[in-house]
Image (cartoon, rainbow, N blue to C red):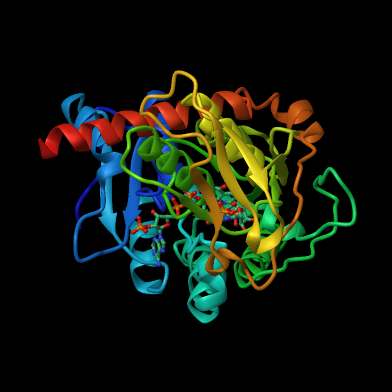
Length: 371
Ligand code: NAP
Ligand code: F7E
């Protein structure tokens, strides 16, 4: 069995991150390495390596001999989870791995339940079987989706849960299992109830990055129209880099607890679209309702690429509607502010700006590579 500990660095804290290749896993790895942790990540086997988001961090960690180790493993496989826990003996486990797409969960409800619900249970059992309940602290990636269409706004830790998708229901099981291992076995286990958080590392299947990438392409003459689903949905959008810090803070407390992490401001999908086009100098005008709603170019002052007035830039494609959707989410972070001294640093305007500029750069890089 390989000894993963670095020479002469036995005092380093050791963290295990499931879902290390994802958006949050990448930011959290960067944060923990900067704090001097030895970081172990679990990555599932795919036919092609999908470590692009981690590449730079991995190279920097390798050069600095700062202790980043990647292990193959999957939440569907209890054996490897037990083996990893026994080998690594982590001080902290950040459980971020999940089938994280709400719309996909309607098409694959059984898989979603197996990975998000039973998978979390497998991981908690692995901690117990490895005899680590008194040593290891556990973070569960819970979600504002648990609230569903809540009767009360903003939503805080005591707002009742009304999950409205297979994704949210699978996460509800994981939420309660986390609480149960805390109460039954004394595991230091926290639920971070995180509202939507985005970044340039967000996958394009989520609405914010889909929008900012399309705006970058339209701005550079590489796409004509952006097709979306529910424009009325309102979300409390923050920056992933701010939110991973809250995960770490939860595990540094003396007592385990659950915390809502959000910005306390809400923006509709339509407004997010308008803000994104604004960055490239395009003003939009929306006309019509429901599936007939369309967004036209009203003016394109200083835009990167000449977009004609009245060009159709946004349209509805019903394939992006969900069988049920949450109309409005907004978080109440009073407890996180008081007990973790955590507050979101990035406004939605700064987030949109960073994402659009980053996507313009990546489209320009693609264009230059093709030339
Ligand atoms: P993400 O980018 O979709 O990353 C999910 C990670 O889970 C990826 O590394 C993925 O691996 C891995 N994974 C998926 N299925 C797996 C399996 N069967 N075994 C092992 N690993 C598996 O998600 P994120 O945005 O970073 O979110 C992190 C966590 O927070 C998720 O649990 C999500 O549900 C939750 N959450 C997210 C938000 C948000 O707004 N971002 C809000 C609240 C809660 P691949 O790279 O191979 O796909
Ligand atoms: O949708 C609407 C869609 O897929 C946001 C995950 O990280 O956050 C995320 O889940 C809203 C929904 O994120 C499109 O109907 C309109 O109302 O970006 P999303 P999500 O479903 O909120 C929570 C907190 C998590 O826990 C999840 O893991 O945007 N929408 N048009 C669209 N959504 C998508 N994806 N694509 C569209 O074309």
